[in-house]
Length: 114
Image (cartoon, rainbow, N blue to C red; front, side):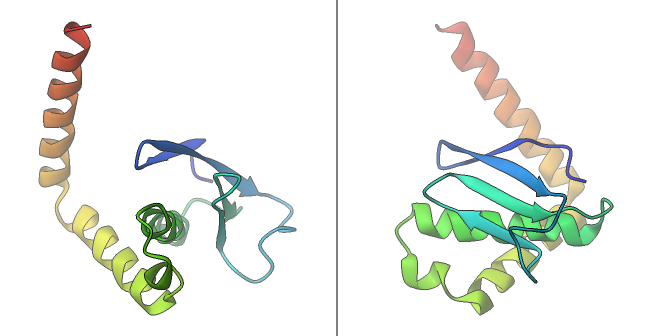
């Protein structure tokens, strides 16, 4: 089960809903509702598939928010983006840590000016 309740995409908050009864998702592992700003994830024991599904749905949302509707509907493109993002994160934890530290430092700096 994903331990997060929300995800941010282009400064918009999307809720993450674990579909414990598997009523919403049919045969898919995930589904995004752009109008309701919800990502539905099939409830399964925490696994790599669950994280990849979250990244997959995030990719759909990102393309939708950017107005790239034709790309958003292209599952081959979304799958390619998902695999690329997942591999980048999994293969480069030191870069992710560096980015997080820089973002934290910038956020701290921005907050102190308020």
